[in-house]
Amino acid sequence: MNEIRQQLFLLIPRLAGHKVLVMGDLFLDEYVLGKASRLSREAPIPVLEFVRRFYVPGGAANPAHNICALGGQAVVVGLIGRDEAGTQLLSELRRAGIDPAGVVVDDSRSTTTKTRIMAEGSLRFPQQLARIDHLNRRSVSREVEAKLIAQVESLVPEVDAVLVSDYQTGVSSQAVVQAVLSSAQAKGKLCTVDAQGSFHKYTGFDLIKGNRQEIETALTCKLLDEEDYRLAGEKLLKDLSVNAVIITRGPDGLSLIARDEGYHHLPAANRTEVFDVTGAGDTVIAVATLALVAGSSASSAARLANYAAGWVVRKLGNAVATADELAWAVENW
Image (cartoon, rainbow, N blue to C red; front, top):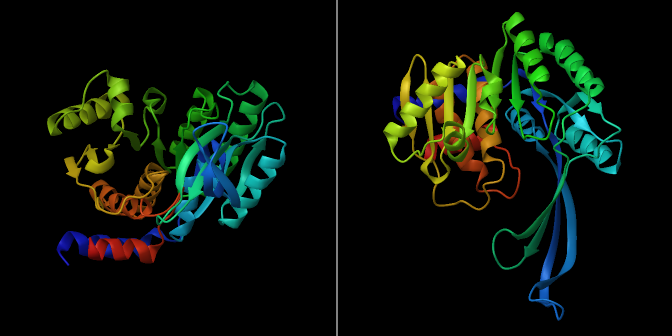
């Protein structure tokens, strides 16, 4: 095992024991699985005979789940509706070991639910045929916003870091984000974000993550080669006064641009066993956050996050990597 891998291997157990506040858009991910029995007479589609249904916490709850899977503690701040889906989501949060202490109930909206219709067959994993999203992207009310801010301000002193997961459904308003940053800076806490395009809101954060398409849209440019990625990252570092930027690149891995460490391109750790890329970005920001809290460099945090993302794409749906799985990936890939 070379020196870099040895450092990562030793970093993994240090991820455990840290507490992270995850603020953002909480989703209930529903999976409906059926077995294709025949073609419909009504339309050129398969008829699925129902097999089973299961739920997993999605949206901002997914990075929280990743944190718990690695031995950390996660407490979430976000919204649910006063409905059956909200009750189910609270149950799934607790099942995953996530503390729902910061969850606010908004009577004016339903719980965001993403339903995936999956067909089972002879392949290793069911294949997704369709997805139905029940969501509301309107801004939250002033009253609900105030409740979210109050939860953030009360919980930040209890944690080691704050992670914002902005899925663009109204929770991460400018006022809420500013409360996160002000509270975190006042207490000396690490502040990271998966901005998913809204980069301007996160000026002053320690680490910002976005994917290639989001960066291209935000900067109105094309990322075609390593120089493009380097320049884009350096522009975000300067314009947003952040310490590090991670740009995820799908099958091409990720790029890190750090104020004290320069530019690094990390090829994908796993390119041969990719079954479902759902939630891989959530894994990246969760693992990078834990690694930084544990005292690692930005480059080590990005490398470990890259291995973790390579592991979770081998699984179905919003998946997580355990410490043992992550250690195997570092040792063998």
